[in-house]
Length: 180
Image (tube, rainbow, N blue to C red; front, side):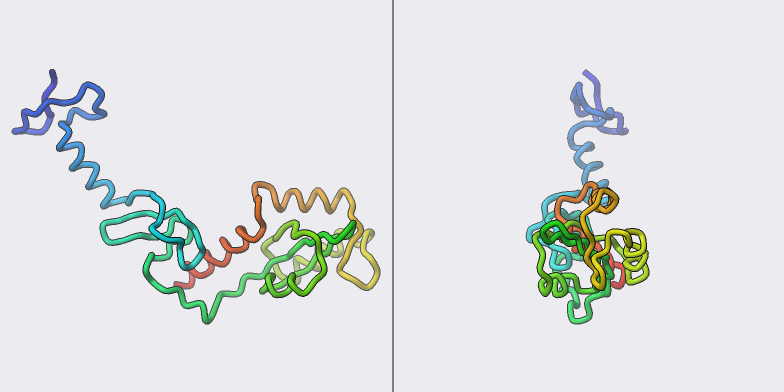
């Protein structure tokens, strides 16, 4: 049986141990690593800034793994950061391309069947998208006839995103974290 590689320690080393260290010294090393790089785990409560449930635990406390907000701190939501998005809404067989810094309020005021996607961008990107799909535009509106090119763009913008609102929340939480 092997013994611990540290001088003065004659404790046995488990056969499957990743290092030639006894259990006590492995646990001591593990504690040191957690103190240096943290340990990812489920937060005790959702992050107050972004709502994520995943955090990193340090001896000094928790940080949200998504936006790095310190758990326990109250985010200053009185001055939420501006995050401009281009949104894509479906209503029947039409798609609206619009922009807003407050998509919840804007979209709530519009008739729609489904929020298809969000794309980070402002009025310049919105206008570029309007020009891109001008052949399908319903005159004097921001609504477009459904077409393959627009469907392909929406699919590309939303690839890997199951809920556009969660993506928007991520962008807002990143902006909050960068401001802090």
